[in-house]
Image 1 (cartoon, rainbow, N blue to C red):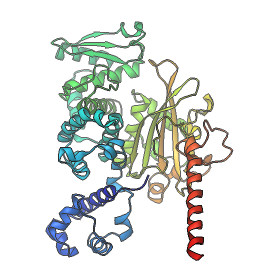
Image 2 (cartoon, rainbow, N blue to C red):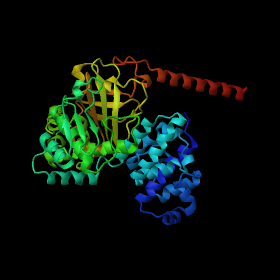
Image 3 (tube, rainbow, N blue to C red):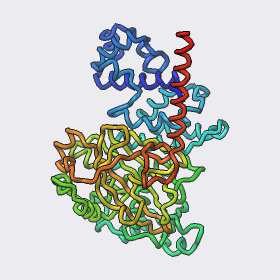
Image 4 (cartoon, rainbow, N blue to C red):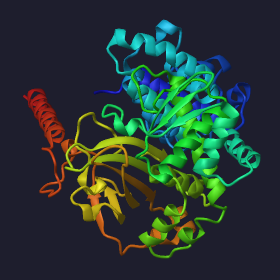
Length: 484
């Protein structure tokens, strides 16, 4: 599909606005530096105007960037997290003009005022069905962008977790949290019902609001999962999050606020347990490794009583905030016992997005990357290079059996980009003794020949090759006709 004129305007508007703010220029100051009028600059930042090449060159010089960087469609640095949101189907298909909005306005609203963005999103959700667009993708992209923009670091939630720990008079345990919920918020907690009901047995909990809220916890939860779930429930109360889903699982009736509050309660639980069970040097042995040693990292993560799908993002945040690592990715897959349909549940990118991060509905995720060939491939550390890329990542892969979803395994990947700045901070990034292979996002779009792990024919790749051959044939025919 070709690049739309509006998309070109939107990307340029984001870049100009961001670079101007980074340079701490007012519109008047940038106008003086670039020779472009304030009204014209405002139109560019609003996505209404796209300047000529000569004016773009003047603008690039005023913003201290190259011409190529300014016109590139790639979003990098702080803007990189917005890529997923910009490419969601809702952003492409919903006619935002009926709300009096441009897509640039929407992006600025999300980054500057999440509360207003939530209200707007709920309005969008009410009309998406009219336009035949799935809202799930839009919400997931917005939530992901929200977390990536902040590198999973939210000072208000962090402070609340600190205050909560100061307020309780005992260690952070399951019994302490149950007592707090019962005494402070009159919760009635039940642990026997869900695992008996076949239809509800895969839910971690069910919550019913009321003067005496009822909380049905799945008794099949491991001790670590039970502690984390109770921390999330406590987070709803301590953060004053009113809107919530009954089960904590995604619902097609869920509002944006409910989903955002679920994420905030998740971050509260992550912060709370980390503060109670780690110190600022917890991952120092990992950072000081000169060679990649999987058992060392596994031991450090397992010493924190939270699920691996929470402890790895926590590590990711620490690597960024404490050690200054810029480019990383996190992926959470659910893998069934029979290794058939693998589903990507969550994905986060700090800094640059992966070259192969595009998520194609119903496609088969790369078995090389996810390691679902056999049980022996689930845990470990390796190198991978995205196909047709000179980039390389050191990838740590973890697996954890779901205690409530029968036959499902959580497969977690943490990828750290191999680059000079990171090699200076983490010596193990220079460990080139690791196994190394090329990888791609999906079998359907992957051109790797004779891949033993292939789960589906490269149908998308074949169509792409066919289109390219047709294009060249048309060009050749056109050239012959011109020369005749």
